[in-house]
Image: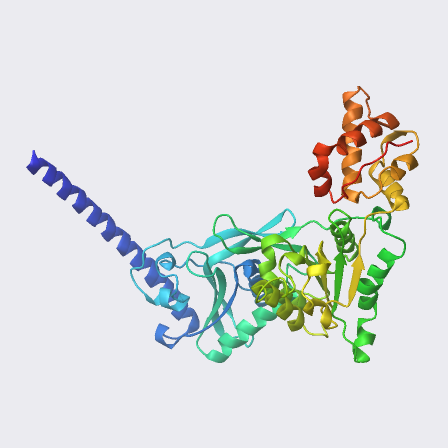
Length: 466
C-alpha cells in the first residue's frame, strides 16, 4: 500500500513539474517578446535603456492616466498597451528590471482598475502596463504605469524608458504638465477616506450641495460677514497681491453643537462653484498635509476641518500638544500667503483651542460665533423645516416656547410632529398646535435630557406653546 501511495505522490510531483516547465517556457517567451518589442522600438539594447520615473500618491492614478492619455493623443500613439509579467513577485523592481528578467511568473496581460472621476462617475485606469510612443522631439520612448497597493505605502509610478535621458526626462515633464492641466480633482468637492480593503488613503468625490442663502438661518449680518471674508477676498485677490497683502485666510466657526456650523460650511461649498473644497472630519484630519498640498495645487480652494478642537487643544490642557495639531499648524503655514486658499475650522469648544491657531494672521483671521438661535431665528427655522408642509395655526408661539434650543432640535421637532400627525391619521400630514405641545412635552421630559444635550440644546424646562 505504501508503494502505491509513493507512486501516486511521485506521479503528482512529475505532473506539477511538467506544468511548471510549460508555464516557465510560456512566460519566458512572453518576456522575450516584450524585451524585443521595447529594445526594437527604442533602437538600443536593454542595458543601454535609460529609465526616468516619478512616484505619486495612489489616489493620483486617475490623474496619471489622464495625463498619459492626453500625451498619447497629442502624439498620435498609444493604441495598444502591453502587459508586464512578474510584477506581483517583484513589487520593488522597476519596469525595466521586469522586462529584462526572464522566467518571471505572473500574469502577462495589462492590468486595469476602476477609478472615480466625480460623484458617481468612474473611468478605467491602467495599474500595470507599457505603451510605446515618442518624446516631444520625436525620439522613441516607452511609457509605463504601475501601482503598488500591497507593499509599503500605496503608490502609483509613472516610468519612462528612453535611449537617452534627455528624451525620457522631456517626456516625463510633458506628461506631468498634462496631468496638472487635466486634473480630475480641480473644482470638485473632495474628502479623504480609508479603503476597507487595502487600508490605503483614498480621495472621495462628494456632490456639491445646493443651498440658497435663505436656507441658512443666522443672526443678522453674520452670513454677510462670512461671505465678505471668504468670497470677497477671492474677488480682489489679484489686487491684494499687487498691494503686498496676503490672500490666504482662515475662518473659525464656533458655537454649541447643532447651531448650524456644518450647515454654513455646506452653504459656502455650494456657493463657491469654481472652488475645490476638501473636507476633513474625524480621523481624516490626519491627512491635513496632503489636503494642504492639494489645495495649493488646485487653488482657489477651501480646506474644511470639522471639530478641530479634537486635535487643536490648547497646550495648557494637553502636555506636549497633539502631533496632529503641529501638522495642522505646519500645513496652514506651508500653503503660502500668496495662495488663494481658505482654511475653515469648526469647533464646539473655542475656549480650549490652541492659542497658536489665532496668534498669527493667515491661520485664523476671522472668528464667527454661531449661537443658539434667538426667537426670530427660531421662527425662521420652524418655517424653513416646515416648508412644503401644511400648518394649522401660527408658529410664533412655538418659537417663543423653545428658548435655548438649537437648529438641530427644531429640525427634529418638526420631524416628530410630522410623525405624530401621520399616527393620528392625517394624510398628508398637518402640523397642528396640539401635536407641537405633545412632542415638546415628550422632548422636554426628564428622561430626554441626554437627547436634548446631543441636539445641542440647553437643559431647562420648557413651557407649553400658548
